[in-house]
Image (cartoon, rainbow, N blue to C red; front, side, top):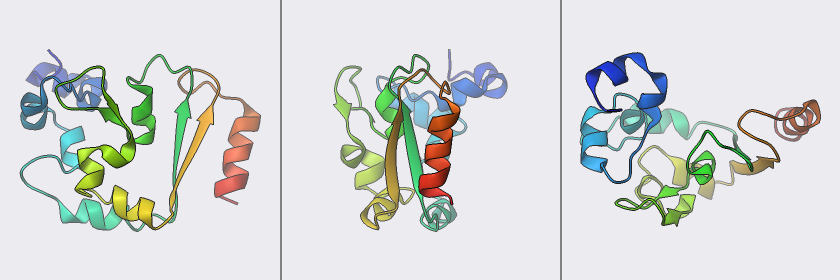
Length: 138
């Protein structure tokens, strides 16, 4: 259902669904995520060129997140293709190994940072936000 034209055209969340059991359909029909991740047959070098220009990529995982599945995807990890139980850390995913959009380049340059918040999706306190801003952006 998520990869139908109706869902893709009207539900933003459907454009972020990467179903590990339906990768060919995802790559062919999902409008946003496979494109921006350079997972399709046509690669967009501009995406990679722009991504690797980031000075810092701060990835924040909510440890009690009930919205994002799997939680590890908040750190660019994900299920192995054809599995809903085998989780791959970021550095074992296809998009990292192939450096499809520049994640490996940025990581090896020491510009990827991993943080956590204790709560649910986007449920963090002012102190958490101040820590992130003070640590990475001031």
